[in-house]
Length: 104
Image (cartoon, rainbow, N blue to C red; front, side, top):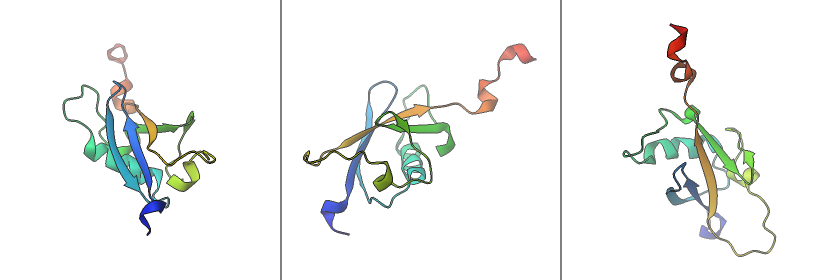
């Protein structure tokens, strides 16, 4: 695949730090991005995802679906020069962690 077809993405975490940027094929799925985020997640963070399902990716105000490709999720930028696209990462704890102690 030609180098210019690759999309450069970085992922903004809850504390303002970033993972990436990395280059992806437009055919890469959102699920693949989430797997990469889990493996690259900084070990020193208090909040961390256990699995890709703990993550929501947001681009241009929209939550991205796992089965969508990077090419489908890109917002058309018209004639703007190519640059790094920042996607926001939200860690959503699993239901087991979300239960309160009051339920005992």
